[in-house]
Length: 372
Length: 70
Image (cartoon, rainbow over all chains, first blue to last red; front, side):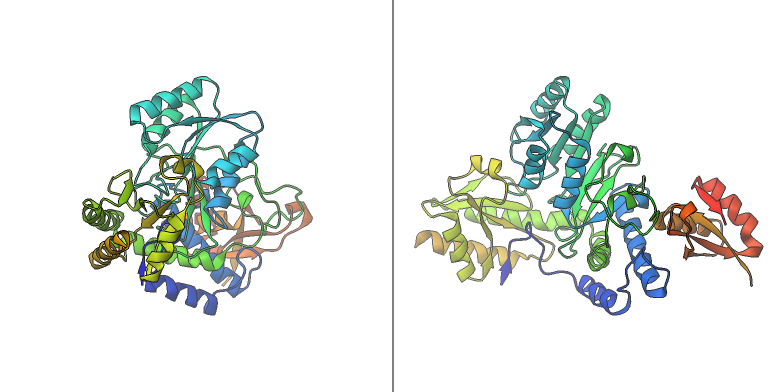
């Protein structure tokens, strides 16, 4: 099997992640922050260790700024509902995933969009215009889940910091592939999945608060047990416990911890280079094919295309018949598909485990399919 | 060997206190403390050797972490 659906979730997982999950379930699977016995504290040790690694990885400096949750979508919902109210103005891009788009709409905010394919200067001008109109926050992805397109998130962050506007960054596709530092990049709230570029498992994510962001500006999304201050009616006032109601996804955290080690040891630059080499090889291989439309022919960690005249889902099924896993359709990003075709497109996406041989096999298969 | 305790505002802050004590060369252990309604309920803290209590207190003050002596 050739797995080219890593933007949905990376596969395979590193052996170290599998060992960490097995080891945690076998030896440490208590409930952290609920008891003082050895199994609960063993789980708590693991959780704190992962907080430290994540804080270091994303430049947050302080482990208490790393809030664990059920995934990137939950992190984005916590961030958006936590600081956006009905009638607020929010700046975002025109190709956002529904995990950004829908919470903004549900919060009752007025959206001001910039064009993702515009150059950085135009994006910044539009963002500044939105800020002048009273926008409270900018919420956007660092990298698209559909196209090989990286947003100018550092420049947007610098502008937000200068203007005193909240910057919420969705790192669903960027974490583990692009260098992100919440302090350097002026990101107030960074939302991260564990199971994509950090090679953890599903059901776990992080909302990482910059040390300079006043956490009291953010209302919790979930209320419940926190293991402390049980007689208080409200959640604790400080992160991370303020945003961690209920039992933590400890197995996912143990996997994330090992995943962070894997990415750190392999190196973000090396991972990105490998993914981009595979992408470049495929782009080159497809360049002479008349029957194929590639959207936004850049080198990146994802690539989006269609076989002309063939619905994307049908192409996906044909590829599956050759043992190639790709994702067709709209990728939960309806705005992005204004730039593709009425029935969406096929996305292939890469990880540290893909090889050039797989890329060559993919080119050979897609050429064969496109001729038939 | 006798132990003394510092209460921290959360489990995470108890671990941060342990880190701060580690940096000062003071051995400590994160533990769950008995809570009372007046303390707002369940809480966590760090346990240190009685002989190192004074130095631990100084290290925690220096760290800037809010703590209570118990």
